[in-house]
Image (cartoon, rainbow, N blue to C red; front, side, top):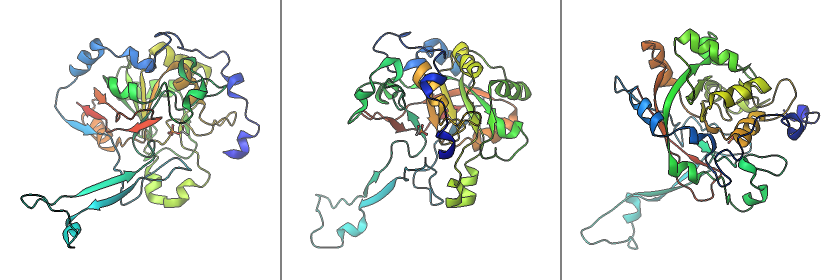
Length: 321
Ligand code: UVW
């Protein structure tokens, strides 16, 4: 990844002609393409509930098998503060009636598990989503934090695009890429129609390798995923995609295999179009169910935790079929 970035083009140059939604929802907007989801989309999504089957998409925080995180981040550490042993000594707190209780806390990267990124999470050329100055991130996100996304919540028609199954693989491979034409072909093979304003859920099952390989997973780290092209970005813009949800750590091929740029789509989709990213989801149970009943559309709902000035926040999205 790092060797290629030395010769990589500048994001400002690469994306100079790329579509932008800055200003589309006013100068103060902080939720971007989530504006595409309103009451009409929520009602249509609710109409997709037929079997009543419920799927939660969050990965376990504190998984005994480990928590996959972006290199440089560390998994959450949970510390037990109070438990029955707290009442072993004479100094134990006493409550009228004899109450005992358990308490704990976590020290966690807000992007260290299944999470929503704030729209201001990434930037280049000193500007965030909607043109906000990157200095507004210093010491905490003054604008385009995760809080407005959390306040609003996300409800819409979700469509699962099972790229791993479509390619006949247990999981996609390191640095394997695909684009919007592959998403369309996958949808066609699954017999599901892609509609404007869909929440797209893309399964790679790549994180299975994290659980199989342990630390070796991070050697030559390059996740599979969508790869930048002007046509792909235009496809997202034309389809008014509000939310991109994947089961990888960063929702796109880590390093563009054509030009060496890191996380181009974070910039082209999130920063420029205001597409909201949901990462590190667990799509396995949902994908198995979709493969079994052939129904790849559903009601998708999510709301990240409300964290003031957060650049992201944990979430447990809920899908109802
Ligand atoms: C980065 O953008 C670095 O990480 P992510 O979006 O995966 O949280």
